[in-house]
Length: 515
Image 1 (cartoon, rainbow, N blue to C red):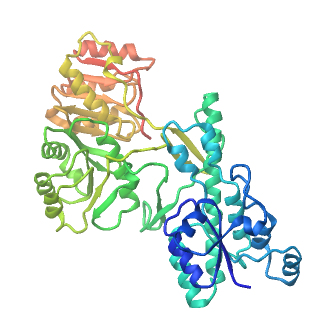
Image 2: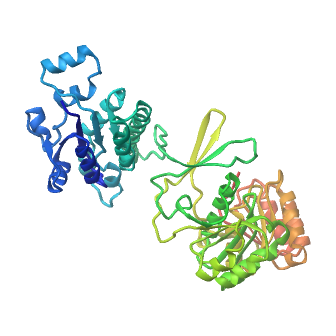
Image 3: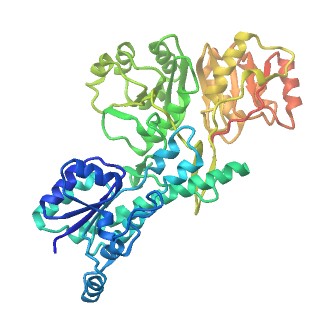
């Protein structure tokens, strides 16, 4: 009795070539529905599933492979008793199962998909065959991934069988395939229920995120690390960007790239951010990419050494020439001009990373952080409060130009670690106070860095001032206006101090802590 293979796939990439290869090796091919039609039209000898089961497909195709002659042939062990029972019941052994599942993920990703359409794309017979074959991998080869076709054919040609070690790996891949599939369905159904109930987060947090690569090490050389990419996030996200040149990205590179990319995408205008240890040491808006870069660098050229640059426009040749003379780890941008690529090619260690902003993003909108034994999940801190929602609480009122400058400072401050203070003017960050244990300490650092440029500049604070001391320090340096959320029990004291010192004070009503 010859070997038998069942092939029933939704993803039909290279399935014809695979089936031909199996047929040449003496396999009898059994198939269903669309796969049967595809193989038959390609000239492959193929047996329809109903000829094996003696039972027609019924219920609009919902029942076709759920039959003892299929599952008995897959699950039978390679022992005398099982073979005897199969013979008594007219069941032929099945040696290979090639199955992948109805496109549930693709279905629910479509716009305006109905609930009924989603339900009809839940595969039943496919997962059952996959799990049966994977369970019985001691005898049966299970294939769920078209990328494995060549490997399996090569192994069969060389050995006459698929070795047990490979069958075990294929079984693990198969169970991962069905686990991810069931997770997608559970998440979808729970999401429907939670949406109706107005619940923000799922009852169970399920993450099916494949590993992209192991990293050289983590934050420190004695820590192991790896990078995973959310398959649902969309090709327009940082995770699916393309590295165009340079050495391998590190754990710290990814962390800083994320911080830099989020910052520059706060702005519709041409913007540049230079990040060091997740904090911006330079942020600016310019009329050109070169101007934005030069203004960002001017804020703190010492700290910029070894930093990460992010741009929200294509890196051009002029800017690349300006960058070339300095040391940076990574440049992230939507694209790089041919001239820029040529100029920076000599810097072989410099990583150029392109994020395809023309593609869509489908992020969950969550930030997930681990704690000892658990996970914290929160909404992303998207956007900022609009200028129309701000409240000028001081006697001195901001002009239209003041509001533009305050908005720039406010957006930049959002991306600084708390306690965060930013001093800015002319859409250029002049000083940054980050991560201090008290707010006045951060204010002093930012103001000292800005020095004489602080006169007539704007100061942003990511949270309210608990005391009036930061306003007093700002006045010593000649700050014109301050923007902060408000909400302190001492707000009135802070307002009175600003009035006394002639400083414009604006409350946004929204805090932007970044821990």
